Length: 327
Image (cartoon, rainbow, N blue to C red; front, top):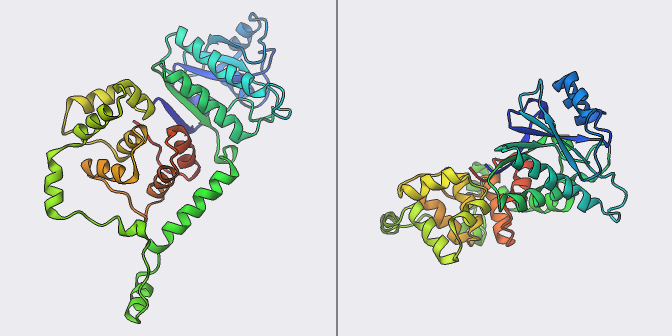
């Protein structure tokens, strides 16, 4: 997956390069910086002493030493004041400069912490948005797998309003599916049928004739047809879907390829399909959307709100402990 949010200890990530949220001296400190220096060993400090420090928004590369990565990229994030002192651009520069160094070092995998979101006080939801936007822009032109590493759930938040909106959306649609079946039967027997929403009614199963006819076009064939209809390139599609190029090649070369549900939905998001079109594409892969599944309801929320930013969708899925979209 080109961009993946993971909960892990960044010092244990087996990647080509780990990014260190350093201070301007590059001589170690607290938080992620201290943990990386401790894990890498004293030779890291010795090399850092030769670098002459680093400016805010810049980055410098060293060896990984005792860590499982080949390189450590040290970048200095901005201290949050009020958002009116160039903090966003400086933070974006941290990601851009680090990714450029990783590219020059021929790295295929890079792991970032959420830069400046600890002692430097950058609001976590805003810091994550800068990270996602900047990494996404880079990956639109480059092939690399990037991890955003969150140490624990408490250190990660999406915006309070978005979380509340999604939670209310889930509650509205999740409730009917989880009413005790016996209670539902008693209400209906007593002459008080439960009212199903229009959304639920639209989830009816296709007729046998319709199902047989749908075998004429496979998931791969429908996907390629939709790409042509949208007049976009294969690369634009799989990058927007957060899908690895090699996986896309497998799908293209095998018209009977069966993707995972997350991969199928990722393509639906990349193609900006309507909810009905998304359900049709999923059906080709043998899946469906259900109101008894939080993952499915979150996907429906974003599609109905016309938000097809896969990175924002993955932020929300991560916040609700659901599988992420992509490879």
